[in-house]
Image: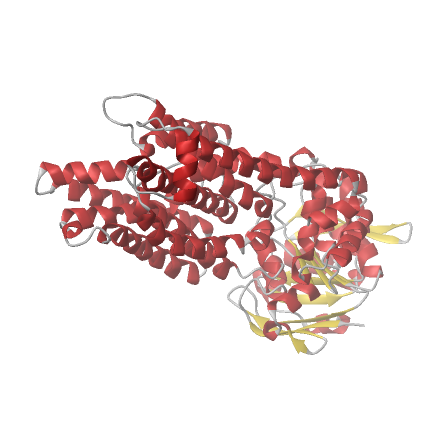
Length: 266
Length: 346
């Protein structure tokens, strides 16, 4: 059982963010453009400077040896760009870099990652001969091959068609259910609501509210933070949230969390 | 990584492993064969037995001197310089994630050339012939220090490339100034001939001077292969895997400076080997940066040796200079690459 804790994380973009997640938690970071979602993910992955603390099982991640940190926390970038058209198996094997050279363990981990992402048949295919959806899965498999306790995914479904969006979210949830922490940045509120155990809503670098999706993705929060009205309902016992009409955002109220926001924090 | 692949798909990766080794073995065999042929090529025709005797028994007759002190150092220098340039090119392309990168890009070659030209300009070569290569290495070292200072402060790849372009321009301008203000036409002639690049009239003394620096550079560059593999992904992803990017950049820059500075010091300015060879090799190694290094070094040695043989075979009133031949072959290739990759690397 591992726990990831953020305690007062601040930098030029973020202001005093405190969160925690434990093994088996899937946490969505949502918020409008410029809210600080990617910045927060980069702070957790130690890719951006910050004040405050990120702890993994009470160990300060900032003070961890780099290789140890890289083995604990995997990062799936929003950028699916590649420099050279290596084959999928070679791409996935890059995920084993933090583990040093352990051929047998690496073999097994790469096989598992390819299997999880459903890419066994494409293992030898070069990256320039993959579709956008296949490439996104290959990048995810690379992150899965790290076999880290924490997986950070930055907009993994951006630019994917609905089929691949659902497939990608299912893969992330399966990884989470296998006992890992998954933190995922999303713009699609329905995907956040359906697939994630908890949702953290950010706005202008601040954490507005966090908790279960019903409490966080309320019509009031969505109106205040996004400046849109939203339709919500249930289908097959799962909640959907559809942004419907845009309004001018209420700048003052969006900046400060309201008192009743704390009631839904977990 | 090959082991991983082989477990995943036993048949094809095994074939690839063999193909990779075959490629290096084939390049090595070709290099040895061409080197042997190069011993026969020159103004004085020599028989096989004469060459063999000169190599094995020594001797002080003119044939032995031609083989041991003229042709052999020229061949070994072609290996060292060509291999170093291509290895540095392969590493730079992988580090900068850009197939248009080559050792000249970071301004190290131009700065080394400037150092050598200044040595000629101030007539320091009259004090000692060793000062010419030392001047070139000093130029390379200064350029490297400037780039290293940038790399230490988390400069982006684009910043590094732009800094390299600026350094190249500055060094080229200073070189032109030195040529412009040269005291005598003889000095200009010396500088221009040296800038054109050549392996002619080099000795094992030249090799002794450059080899320790090149060896240090090879160690740095060959040791960076695994980290370079991760730069197939974007820089954030590579860092998230535990790669210390500023340190990797510093290693590659230092390794490149040692290899290119030492190469320019003894052979003058020879361009495009570092660009062309990695491109020729890349498809044969599955485009993997680490697998590219050894075949690139062998291919660079082979290509430079072939170019050196070609210019000896082409009869002209004045012997063609090696840097001119490599530029004539390399520049159109460079343009073709730019046209082909237009847009993708914009």
